[in-house]
Image (cartoon, rainbow, N blue to C red; front, side, top):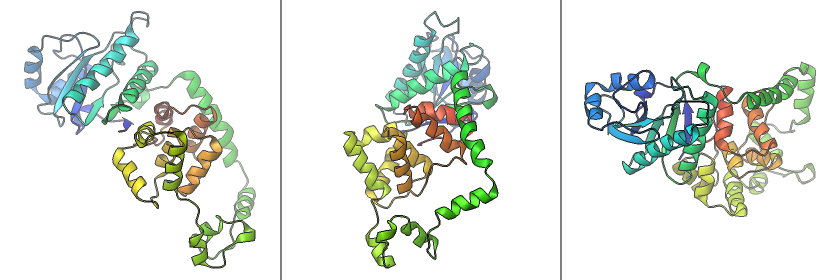
Length: 336
């Protein structure tokens, strides 16, 4: 099941459980903690008083009361003290403890804030990486939908060097695409123009070498290449993967994968098609081929496409890291 990075107010989310970045007393505080207590009402504090606090890196659960969520999972993240006092391990434990508690209460949807990244001072880029990696690894083994809620985009950054490298990669390609003269763009588009009377015919025409062009529409339909679904299933088998391994690595919901598997002519969205190319760790040419089966192409007129291309070119197929970068550049995310 997928991990979504979203901008939202966690107290308004209609999920089975929201996670509260609490302090060890569990008696409320500032930031997300205070907002959750205000939204849930006084009964939340009454129940928290009976819990006897919570150690850093652990989690406890209460009812949601006035919140749309059924439960509140209270976890205590570490205070940042330079990174040499076990902060990373404690932050990982806070996410893992919360996820395991949600699982034991049969929660199918859970929303997390970025734990410890507020007044506790954990550097936001490191906090996000730990959140994404820990949640992502958990989801490879369990069926659950998780939302990582970033309230303020202005407070969010990915690692400086990675951001700079991607920005440079975009500039080298995106700018060049948009500085072509109109005449050059017209000439380039005419190069690929098929001599057919309709868009449908043109799409079919592009599938055949000119020497073997079909004589009729019926003949063309009879010679169609494998579909996106067929290519996807073939590549899964070639990689020796199970279906579950593939759709989880693609950050795709099991129900959506079932639709694709059962319908040979299923047309996925572009982010879905790209997500499967990433999950299968396809090199760029094969990724382009898979996109083509779904009716899409990599375009240097799209920052979304260029960012995904950057990660494939650098052989980084971690879909959660790719989504971090897409989120940072205000683009749609893969999968989900």
